[in-house]
Length: 343
Image 1 (cartoon, rainbow, N blue to C red):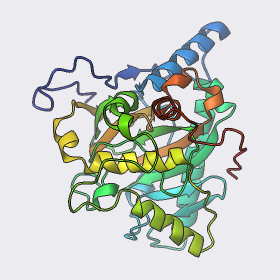
Image 2: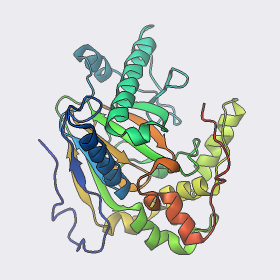
Image 3: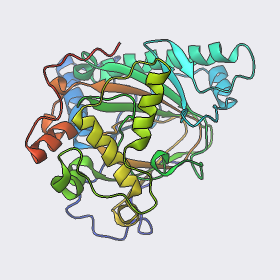
């Protein structure tokens, strides 16, 4: 079982001119334990950063993250809360806290917290070796466990994972930092199936150019929910229960609108060029999901760790969505002088 390349039944249009995501295989021994010369490792690491920032996926046929079989069996037995605000089971490293789990016994919460804490630490250490220029400044954001089958999963339109989109968090603004995500498929038998399409740079040129000033955006399809109402509602709810919520920058507001616009654009979903990828059991992959338009067609039981990468350490800063949008609209979309406290 492996990666499935573009197939005729998925995409019959000419891909010429489209900035499409590619898959970059990485040897499993690459990372903090690399035995090669320091210069070669640094050059390889720089190349991986460039590939990610170009909108490609780093793929590990065999995950570099070790998960004990007893922990894997425990994860396969878990289910998440049905509450609408729990899209996945989340682990917050800064608080050492888990949310979204249906507790079946007194020890479940602690066991899951320990497993996700270990996963988060392992991934953070691995990223530190593989991508040291990122790791020196990266913010370790949420980890998550995704126990639900994605195929046919019920969700409101803007929350559906099976529609192509770029990531934007409704309650966690990034202020232009890049969203780096590390995934691991722990399903023992089934692949996790993705679609990707054009990268953010191409999509922004096509859709956002005339609307790059925040507040102006294509009208949603008839019957669709307002573009950013869910994010605003979640932020109001978080404030009401006393959770810290940072104000969204114009950039973050635009990205959330763009996330929703792509999901609500039925013509784009039907006709855009697509590539299908199958990530087999026990594989891992890394992707900057703020620039790679992606959808999850099927798959159950995956782990994920998110990092926020500051603009100051990017290898190709011109490829960052914030810089693309600022070029399009001709003005800053964040306050670059503000120091962001993410603690």
